[in-house]
Length: 255
Image (cartoon, rainbow, N blue to C red):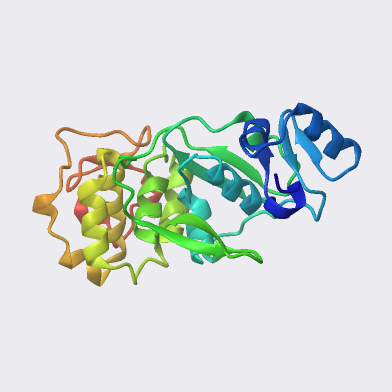
């Protein structure tokens, strides 16, 4: 059996099951903890002592433990450079998607940023399209991120207030270079009607050139009206309510 120093990289979190599967029983684990070769960071979760953890360490670690997880939503847009259109606080919220509930310790680590799991995805986990693996750290650990075209739809699937729509609208100011073929693919795979209608409305509002290249006839946009915000104004193109504050000279003719 190899020593723990040989098989556990700095910055990786492992649980007791992983240690057991690699030949370390309770007695050996206790010895490593007493000798400070291992550090307990949560109940049943361990790491080699080292620099402060980053959220990327946690995401890579839970992937290594068998969870198929990716970074999405506004955290992915931030990574891709879209959130410079917004004023953000120093603390980031890292939104993770996974087809099963992540272990509780994922959210209990003492790190600068906040990790949250988005409870519902607008995409099927069975078709993991629209994801890119980005290397992180000394060992180029692969961390999966939603590409911008998917991340925008993940974001729009959760908005339910005028403030959130206005924030999404500011982010959309940077969406001029989205790829129409990828947008089309993502929209055909998206399962949430609200996200698709709102995405199309924002694209139309900003008059992006790629919007004109979409084949909307291939999209399932559902039937009937969708209320996104209370006391909003109904857009007759996509039958969604939008904030009154967003009706201006550019959009007024749409109603």
